[in-house]
Image (cartoon, rainbow, N blue to C red; front, side, top):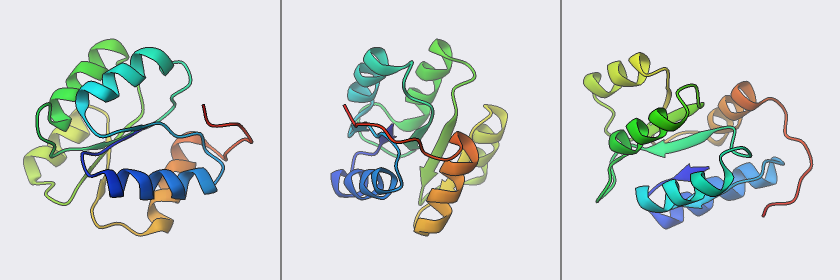
Amino acid sequence: MIVDDEAPICSMVAEILSSSGYSVWQATSGAKALEIWGNHHREIGLILLDVVMPGMDGLTLLAALRRQKPNADIVLVSGRLDEDTRWLASESGCHYLPKPFEVSDLTQLTRDLLGPATPSVNP
């Protein structure tokens, strides 16, 4: 699942991962992410989570997701990832991907965490 308040970024990342064979859900808010998570948590193996978002920010959403599934694979994504956030990512068992990122970095990290994509149909 991709969570980013910027719809074009969400769509671009979804296209990259979909074209690599992964099923992808998109959310442009923390509330929408929790709704998708509630309906598809068994199918979601990785969450790419923007840190800076209006309303529910990424760190608040991270805490909510960790309460529901403490061992969920989560990647914090941000162009403003400061030392405190890096420490929090590390302490909470998250990976992080700084913006802007290379497509190869995104696909390699996804492959490292999920394994190779398996053919499936996006719901």
